Every structure is written in structure tokens, then in C-alpha cells.
Amino acid sequence: MAYDSSKQEISLSGSVSVPDVQAALKTNENRVFQLGTHQNINMWSLFKPIRDTRPAIRLDQNGNYAVTQLDSVLVPALDGMQVRAQGCCGINIVQHNHPTELADLSLTQWDWMYIRPTGKYTIEGKTATQDKWTPVRLGDFRGYKHNAESPFETLTIPEVLPLNGNVVIDTVFNLSPNGTNGVGTMGTATANAPRSILISDLSTNGFALKDAKLGLVLIKDDGSGKITKETPYRMCTCDSVSGGKIHFPFKSFAATEFPNGAYAIAFLTNATSIADSLLLNTLWKYILHPGCDITKVRFGSATEASGLSISISTTKFGKIWSYSIKISVSATGKAQTLSNGYMYLLLNGKRVVGPKIFLASKTFLPGESQNYYGTFTATDVAGVANADNITMWEMNVHSNVAGNIERKGSFRIQNNVESGLILPDLP
Image (cartoon, rainbow, N blue to C red; front, side, top):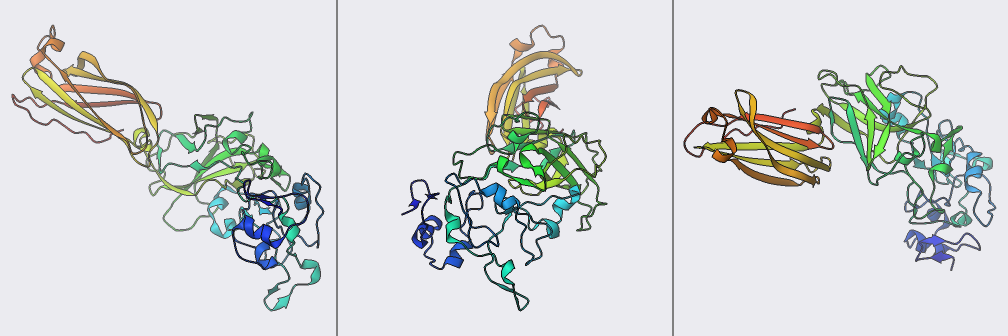
């Protein structure tokens, strides 16, 4: 049997049988045409049935036919895709000429689609001529790997972006840019190579994706429900990757610039670099990043954008000033390390006591929260003139995602325990 269940792959050499393909696709289907167009076929396998008019394709022992063969074959003009689709490992990769086209589903619905064989089929009552048949060849399953992996990392765009323009999106793995072209931010060779498609295998119309730069475009939601080339947008390419975080150096956003939010889309481009301030270049091409969904975003403070929330409750009882701090990261926020958390007492707006550390360093994961408690006593304020008049406090903490965070508030002056102010998560 040509199928190896332990590797979930079919041998590159020898004949391929229907039972081999059934086992690989995990199906009881026994019709060759249905197997060759089956929904369970993994598009990221380098070897699989592809749309080609030739009745048979010869393979060498290493299967090196895949890219050169498919790059030279145009998709037959049967379903209206031939103008936009040129085969590339059996996948439809579309170049767009304008960044707003990336949000137009009428243009992008074919992007990154696996183009299956068609067989001898009919469109609008007319049978295709024989030179347009794309037969299903059982032999195309030689080398098929059912657990092949996409070469593109999954990217996660946060739903709140910071008004300061310091946009960061997450990857699943801790990647580093590969040289200056940013390939490392898009993907790496997988554990299942060489049977999985690699970025180095992919190109379209002379654009090798291994040379692409990763970009992010923010397209304004103007409330019309339509996106055209006239729709305002901002875009730039990434400039750094660290610890699974990809940084995009946008300039700051005005609070009124995207009142209804924006559509954030990751893309691959042939541009060497795109700065937020550059005008559109007609030579630039844009390809949807297949590992990232179009995300509707809004804009807020850096702290809000990271999902970090800090609330503080304070009391004053005699010469004891007490505080309770709750720090949490939303389930949809960013994992982040908080460090150097300090509390101060203020008199007439000036720091007179402190710093008193309440947090040295802690990494908060999405959905995690922690309470911190502390007090200042008469001993702490010894030597401070008019210490009884201390009515203000200040908190400082540093986030590796949101930067330095400051909170200020007042104690209530009562000779009994009484809750102080609980401040919202202000910028």
C-alpha cells in the first residue's frame, strides 16, 4: 500500500490506488472524480490533484515538477477565473493593484483558493471542448501529505489599536525577520517539509513571495457600507519583530479620523518599504495574507489597546493610608509583563512619601487578574510637615506593551474606614 498512516502521506513512487487515497483523505468515497476533487484535500500539500489539461504528468523521484509545471499552466477559461488566476502549486494567488481592493469581497473571494480539476463538465448547457478538459488523475496523489502545514503564520490583529500609532500584532510563534524582507514575519519551513508548500515555492506573475514585505492597511469605515479607491486609508510595512510581536510604525491617529473604526488587513507587498506618509506607488502590488482575517478595529489609548485595566480603591483611617489595586488583562487583550509598580503619597500635588513598591514584575496572560494591597503608616510619613493633610496618591507601573502608566486620585479624609475613588482605565 502506497499510503503511510504514520506520516499521513502517499509515496512519491509507484502506483496509487483508490484505497490509498481513501485512507489519506479519511473517506469511503470510491469514485475517482470525487476523490480528485474531494473537500478533504489539504491545499498546502505540495503534491495533490491540480487543474491541468494534460492527461498525464510525469514526476521525478523527488517530485520537483510541482512549481515549474504549475507556473507555466494558465487556468482554463471555463469559470471566469482565468484572467485573475495563474496556477501556483494549485493555488490561486491574486495580486491587487490598490490596497482598498483587499477589502472587496467581489475581488478577493478567489484569493488563496485551491483550484481543483474540473473533469469533463458543462457550463450554461455547453460541454467543454476536449482541449479544455482538466482530467482527474489518480497519479496526482503521488507524494500527497494530508497533514501538510501552511507556510504562513497565524496573525492576530487586536480589536483596539492605540491612537499613538504604535501598532503591534501577534504571531503564534516567536519569529524574527529573515534579512530585510520580513519573510520571518510571514512563515517558516514547517516540520512536515518537504511535502508541505513553502513560501519559497510560491510566486505569481514574477512576484516571488519569499521576497515580500509584510504590511498592514487600515481602511476607514465611513458608514456607507461600500469601499472604493476613494475610501480613506492608512498603511505601512512592519519594521521589527520581537517575541512574536510585529510592529507597524504608523503615525498617530486623530480621535476624529476613524470615528466608526476601520478595517485592518494584513498583506504581502513587493514594495521594499512603505512608510505611513508615503504616497501610493502604482508599481506596488498587494496580496492578502492567508493567515490573518480582516478585522474591524477601533482606536483608543495604548493601555486600552493592550487590554490592560487598572482600578484602585483607597481609604484613610487616622494616620493609615490604605490602597487596593486590581490589575487585569482582558481575554482578548495582549499578554504583557508589568514591572516597577510604585505608589506615592502626595501633598499639594507633590510627592512626599514613596515610592512603595507593590509589584516587582509579573507577566499577565489574557484573561488574568491580580489584586495588590498596601498601606502607608505614621512611620512612613515621619518627618513630613503637615502629614495629616496628605489627601492624594499616585501610582506608576510599566507595561512592556503599553509603556509607562500613571494613575492619580484622592483619599477621603474621614476618621473611619471609607472607600476611596475607583478610577476607570484612563489614558
